[in-house]
Picture 1 (cartoon, rainbow, N blue to C red):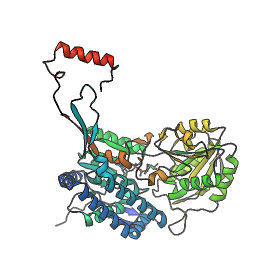
Picture 2: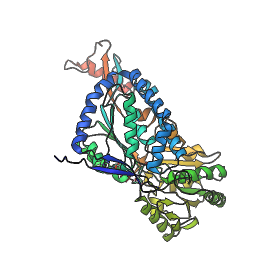
Picture 3: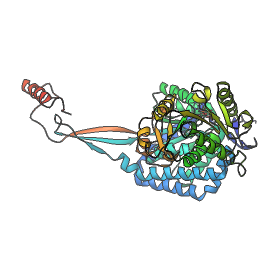
Picture 4: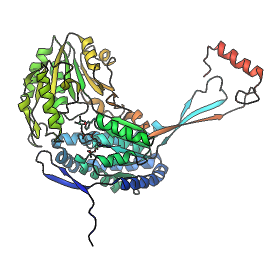
Length: 493
Ligand code: NDP
């Protein structure tokens, strides 16, 4: 008897187009079943306690490190990025995993709060509990670093996790589940579900207790709308149009080196990658000259050949091409490369100059190996232009003396002074953005607390002779409250 075939999809090597894996499309009904198994497992996982979970997570971390060559090869195959970039990505992912495992207990420890004068007879505490089941929807650009930034913190906090990787990097997602299950004490703590956008959509409405999404702003809005129907809270890590501010006192050699890497590495497919530079006009020419010199030494190619790989998602090529065209049409010029640099599936480095701020190339996320350098009169102008974006993810500031002052005025979630990307590799600090770049945080204590809820517990330590919260309240109790309120100018709490 013929059986109904499970629908499936292929994952490709973006450098060659060759099929490298075939994965099932998990249906909406299956997603609901998987989430319900994860919910059953969540009680036992929570009961394991911080130490029990730490042991499992550190064993997983050790296993990933032992197999770093295997997972890096798979990441490189599915994304097209160089093997060394893939290894660096794995290293940073395991550092987050270890940090979350080691710090969850301290971050979730019950905190004691001052009860205030009026409630001086009470003790006031805030406990933290895991939410239950966390859904994670991941992107393809950093297929291990990005999802692990949610998965490891959610697991360490005591939740079970159902993970939907991008269809472009399903193999990495499946590898994560398989390796976790080698060290897992029981089933359904961490499950990967493969599929296309609809499978992700089904996860949003499956009844998970929180949904952590990384990807485009467009899809983030769909995810938030779907989650709203079931009152499922969300963490949204979306795109960016990260500015780089170069002051007259910047170390230009370092600024150029880091900015070009930030813009071009991973084929420019980094949410926190540099997309626009605002260089003080006193040093802009030198910055451009050094940037062009550096661009001449780097090229896109297949892993083992290029400094960076192809566009992982073929449709992105059109966006990149259109941004180069609109930048030129709107009055920008090419300092290096141009439309001819787009050689699908690769895009060679492109440096554009003096592109008007209203050009699509300056407003929209390009996600390609392109950097736009615009001159500014002073740092105030740089700050204003940096903040004029609808995005507000990360930013870089290059200056010997003004870094902190400028950083403090930027409307974004993360700033690196005289550095780039570094905040993503520091596990103790939160990662996330404002405006169209999303809301909520991953990483650090703030990121871990996203996967918990606060339970306030107050307790009567001794009884006061006055009764405020009772029908037996007397006129003299009222008088006392009013007198105290006036005397302390409202500072009763
Ligand atoms: P998406 O935002 O569409 O995809 C991100 C994840 O969401 C994938 O796992 C995707 O699954 C899933 N998804 C797609 N549709 C839905 C849906 N309706 N409900 C729930 N989940 C869904 O990104 P793209 O891959 O299409 O990339 C488009 C652009 O997004 C890029 O060009 C870039 O500008 C930006 N981007 C930003 C990233 C970041 O790090 N901030 C990462 C990736 C992209 P599937 O892949 O199976 O469709």
